[in-house]
Length: 114
Length: 112
Image (cartoon, rainbow over all chains, first blue to last red; front, side, top):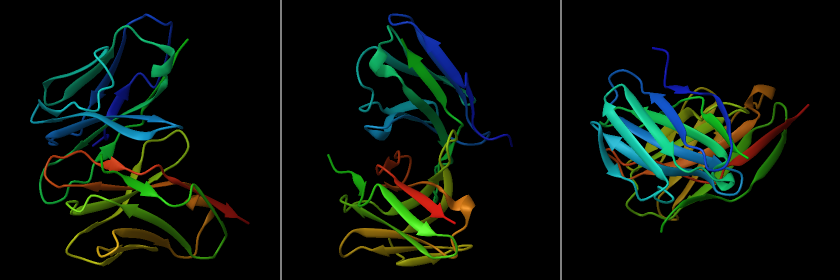
C-alpha cells in the first residue's frame, strides 16, 4: 500500500482565497483524521471521521474550516476564506478502528497564506 | 481540557549513548499510548505503542515505559544513532475511534 496520500504537498495562496486539501486514506482503514501542525501549538486534531461520518469536529478552529468524506477513499479539508494565520502543515491520518488505534500519517500539506 | 505534554523541548545526546524522552499525560481515561517520530518535512511515523494494562514494552532498540500511578510515559532509545535525530511525540487515546492527542514534541539531537 502507498500509505496515506495527501495533495498538494505545498500550497501558497493569497488571503481571502479558498483552499482545498485532499487526502486518500489507506485502503481498508475506517477512521480518518485531520491534524494541523504549527510551531506554537504543535499537532492539533481538527476533525475525525469514522466510517465516513464526522465524529468530532470540536477542533475545527472556526466556520471558515469545513471537512467532508464523501466515500471511504477520499476526504477534503476546505478553508474559505483563508487567512495568514491558517498557515501551517496539515496532516491527514488514517487507522483501522479495532484493538490497536495506531494512526498512519500522510506527508502533509504545507499551506502558506500570504 | 486535558492534554498530553512533554517535559523538555530539546534533548542532546552523544552518538552511541542511550536516550530517554519523557512525557506526562493527564487524562486518566486514556488507555492507549503511542510514540511517534517525525523527521523534517515528513509526517509522524509510528515507533511503538503500549496499552494501559502493561507497564513496559520493548521493540528494536526502543522501550516504552508506562507509570500509571504518576501518569508518566517514557521512550528509551538504546545506542542512539544519527538517524534517530528527529522530533518525538507522545500521544494518547481513549480507544476506539477517538483521535490521538499529541504532546508538543521533544527534539532529539545526536552529537557525534
